[in-house]
Image (cartoon, rainbow, N blue to C red; front, side, top):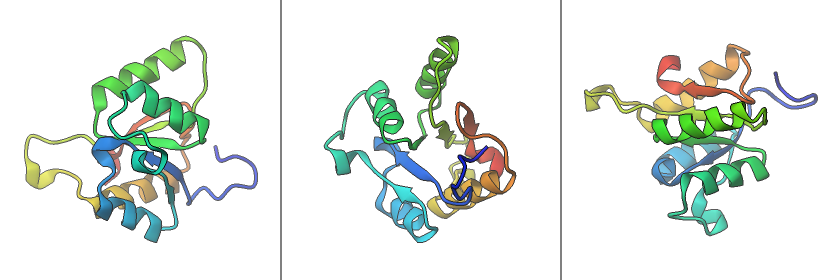
Length: 130
C-alpha cells in the first residue's frame, strides 16, 4: 500500500547499472517518476548488495535486469524479517524481440501501480505487467 500522503502513480526508483540506460531514465522522468542512477551517487560498478543498500537508504524501489541476485537478496531481507522499498525486475526473454524496451518498462510500472498491489517488501517481475 502507498505511504500515507504519497501518490501511488509516482515512484522513487533506483535503476541499477544494467538498467540505467539514458532512454529509460528519460522516459521514467517524463512519466513523473524520480529516478536516481548509480552515476548520480558515484556507485557505478558496485556490488548488487551495495546498490540495494543505496535504494533502501534513499527509499527507492530498485529496478534491475539481474533476476537471480536480487531474488536472493529479497529472500535474505524477508528471512531476517526486514523491510525495504521493493524490487522491480525486467527479465530477458529467449526471444530478444519480446524483451521489454524502455517504453514497455515504463508502461509495465504504470500497470503494476494501477493494480494497487503492494510494492514495499515485494519482488515484482515487470514482464508480467506488460
